[in-house]
Length: 85
Image 1 (cartoon, rainbow, N blue to C red):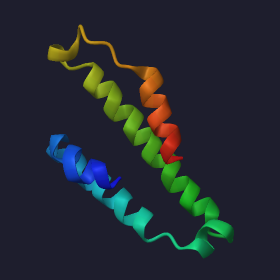
Image 2 (image 1 turned 30 degrees about the vertical axis):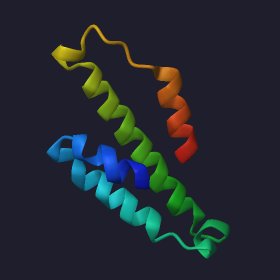
Image 3 (image 1 turned 180 degrees about the vertical axis):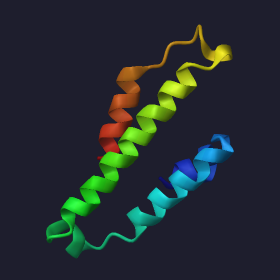
Image 4 (image 1 turned 90 degrees about the vertical axis):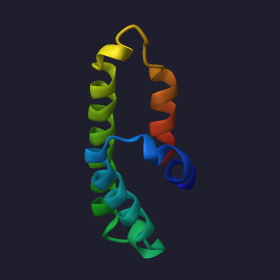
């Protein structure tokens, strides 16, 4: 997450900044008690919602004309997503 914010964040579309910023803020706000207690389902819901956002973003990237002949490395993408879940 720190690497992304330091180097890759600036490559996002302007409309996507807010979603990423909110998710990162929410992740930083997680306390140990939230993961081991009753609030874990809320944390998991946020992660699942962000996963859907990422998948949608990747599909939009895949639809861009200048990237039409460049396939996505879905194995690598899935691996990166699993690291965050």
